[in-house]
Length: 528
Image 1 (cartoon, rainbow, N blue to C red):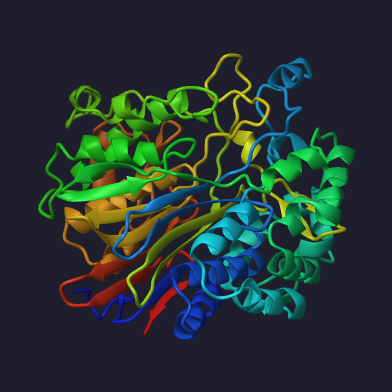
Image 2: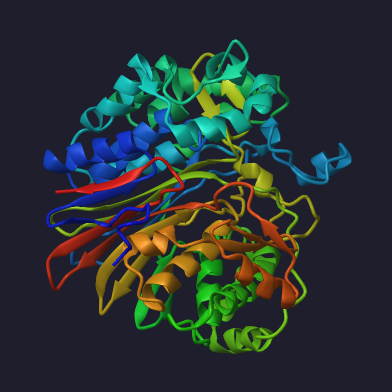
């Protein structure tokens, strides 16, 4: 139990349903749907639609999404809502033009957005309430305005220069050249119109007709190779996938398979599962082991994770006992190993939500624009802000993740699901770009190794071995930092909070739900 003299929050406890998101208006919208008899899918769609309006730096209908859905009493399913590169995409042509990486503020980084395709497919297969009811709150906020919350305002301010220089973003997201501050009212009426059209006509309203035509014209005017045919193919772009999993401390951890990096979270768990990480283990040792496992797993991510439709990704081998044992042997308890360096761009901007409904259906849902405000390309005719997922492609000839026509890039966004004895125990997720896979492992270790409650595990100080440095939040004690430096880590104070988590734990024995939301964001968990 937490110290009630200190700042913090308790986990939300409820008996019928619960939802946790990174924004209070999204949580409230989802809870309203749950109270009205909607199921977990309905509530998730209502919540994420609101987030696309009120967290514009993080997500939007011009982005991608992944889902893990566990129907009560049924087997979990995965939904890959990540978009593909245009048919005319060419790594060779970009190399000839002098590119070595894909800059995220260009049309070359815009794959065909997959979120709307995923939303409508999920709704058609599992939803119960009509889309116009689910989108009602989001449409109201888009058309009539919403108050900017403190964390959103903080992120907004950091992106001010890019917004000013972006393609159309300054007109919508700056006022007199200044980003919106906490408490100010912002609206996106054109986005409200797009949500109305999707509610009425489904995904076709986004991928065909006037909206698709306008988006293609915008992208091609900036040098993109997108066509209306590319967008039309995106109409049915989302597809169901079988989750991949590993065991950890008696539980089964489920993730979306590649092209997502969920595999990497499972690899980290496999490595740290061979070490004692219980509550009595000193914090510096715990952070060190997690950092070493992270570096090893991410090295393999950068070498192998890609779109399996275009290149093989040896999931079974990477999760196998032989690979796990070999990686564990490389972890020294005394010294930091050589860092594995990343060449992908840094990316952190995503929203994640968890829902469990009165029937026990559970959903783990993540939606993203990639970098803050995505590609900074806004179509003024439709109000759609486009993501920058294509910047994760490599331009290295022959690399498994090399840009190619109709190919999906390596994705950082990953929903998680925890199960035990054939029953779902927890939908969970940790936002934060590169950090997400490491964050999944750290969060689960806090719960299952240290015995923290759900909110304590979310609140716990974070660290991340990234780009040759060990980034640590300021809540990690100086004496712990000194011990990590003595082990050879190049420790760097985190400039901003690392990631953001949401989760709902299902206590089957007591018929109780525990829900938690990350204080690093503006959001909250609610239930009834």
